[in-house]
Image (cartoon, rainbow, N blue to C red):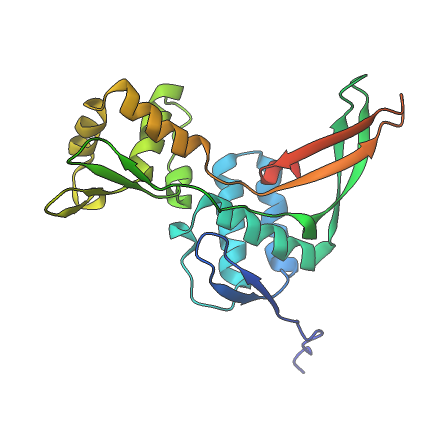
Length: 233
């Protein structure tokens, strides 16, 4: 006799931050949780990212490609799936700003937000050229090579965030150009132009939430902003 299906899995709605698209999702099941736990045990960033992506693919009911979404989209989506799967709170250790004592603080995962307002994606290089930027996608982060130095990885990040070059006569997609041609383009930017590109990269949103707690050791009130998925779990 076939074993019964034990549970009716509920569905929930969420909004993808960078696109505003509403999707439905279900909590992850034991089979997905096992993969996540195994990936976390390795402490390998790529394996953890792959497990998070696979979880999103399995749990989101709509047809989406996580590899093309912004990194903060995936972090937000995973946080919401995790909240409906194993609980809407998480316990984290936070150091007091006064005495450095580590406090166990309960964080409400449902309070996690991503603010994508006020970010200018168009960077005017001169009277002839404007760069249209995009948020870094998951596939860019997954391809990051730990053997590269910081400068090499930063160049890859810059290249990955270049979307289109707008001229007075045409629109050129950086995806249609070779990596060598795009690298040469970046190498020919002035220091001022590069700084403008870096300002965009430094303003890329992340999942975040403010946490307020009193230190159990010295009583000092602390207000800390958790930023990035690693801060919450």
